[in-house]
Image (cartoon, rainbow, N blue to C red; front, side, top):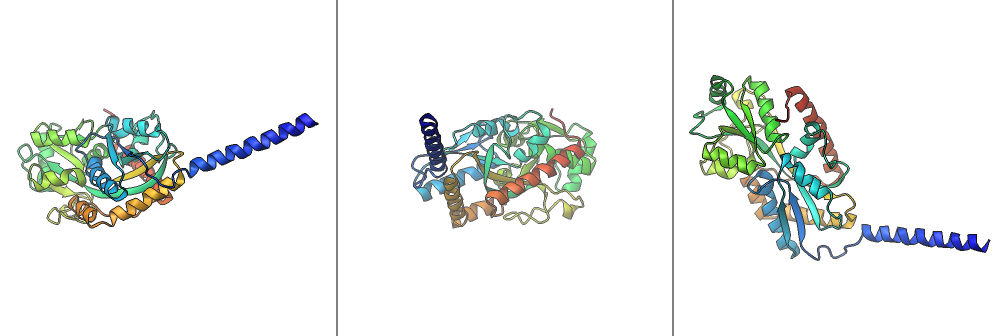
Length: 328
């Protein structure tokens, strides 16, 4: 009896200590951040995710007094970096900045080493921009959507478009366009939008169905030509670029970017980061940058952002099936 009583006391004490430890780990950082914070960006520098991540991390660093560091981990349409981030310690010092590509990946990659809905905790939407059809003006001398479609049909499969990788939004956007316009523009996958844009400007490829965020500066600089934006309305900061719908094609695709935390990250840390994000989005500096990139200011956090991502996974799964898009 004494043995059983002692054992019961020990079990109760162990349970209490375990529960206390779990509670402490869930609310472990009252003064977060106390050291540098890493943001894993799953694409090379120069792409759309990077275009928003850099000014955002600079603002967070300034506001918190702690350094927010970008860790570019490109490859396989953003899935390599996502897998790395999913395995990171959930201590509040590693976050993941993904994009619409990660809502597409489940329908394109049969074997992922992470689950965007189960391996992460949704933190917040970062930005949303329409996609834009851009061309190298020397290779594709079109000035509007009709001219672009006519040139593509005349090329009969010899015109191509670059993407951020197999299964990326650029990839599916191009296949969706081919289906709607009756064209046969060939897909050329890259390891990120940055390298694809470099080749577009250099004349190695003809076109891209890109997020406005990564193309914005190059459009303004005249290095590439914008044919149409794929949204209901013209993009903020780019009032002179007509929509595809204005030019007779019901083609609508948007690119969004978001932040996630590895599953198990303390809830109070996530709440603190969300508060810092709201502060950053309300700054005049980021408002001006987001407008210059053709982006809308976000207001979607936590579970609401998670439900949005779930809806996007379903939507893009249907697009992938309908378009017949395949991994090259």
